[in-house]
Image (cartoon, rainbow, N blue to C red; front, side, top):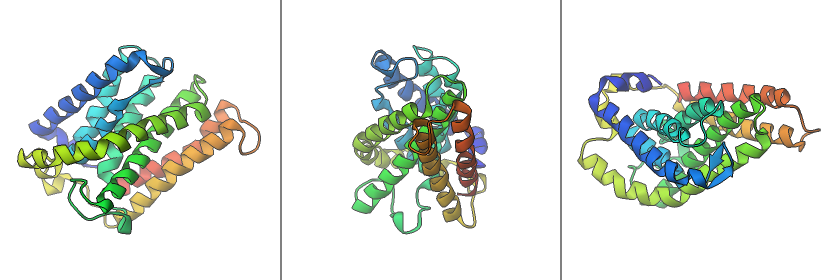
Length: 255
């Protein structure tokens, strides 16, 4: 994950952080009045932005998603949950570029223009794991403070994120990729090769990300709702999800 720090050396990347944050916040703010869980989440078609901008702008998309969500929180949902909203949205914008091309036979090995069936499948997979990881991080933190049960919030965030990214993302990516390439603002063309982390076996990291993300969601929901045993108190849910979060974070470093 070296690139999340080295990117700050490049003016273009800093501008792309600001662009991502501005676009994300600008779409989020008007819909604060349509809450799904008042004070915590709302209808969010803007959730397509971190996924697409991650694939185009790399770590700038991740930082922009984090700051954009925080800006949006100032207009109605700012609170303790905003801490985990910042972290969760950072990883929402990090997972797509980290996973792309690193899932073995599930990766298309093609450019990011979402024109083929294999590209579409790969896009939907990275968008889904990004949605899950964001949901697990935010729901874990909110449950830690006893604000909203994990079993309620995590599925809502997952679906809210994924539906927007799946429906709007392919068209937006198809529209933006050739223009971003023509304008030389793809993150891989801005950063130097030595500024980007290169793992010897990135598929190992990708596998850990999947195990950690999906495992955390399943374990948290099962224990929170009583699908596995009896419904657990907040600390029980928090403790059950921690190992999966650690696996996910390790995978991000190894991918």
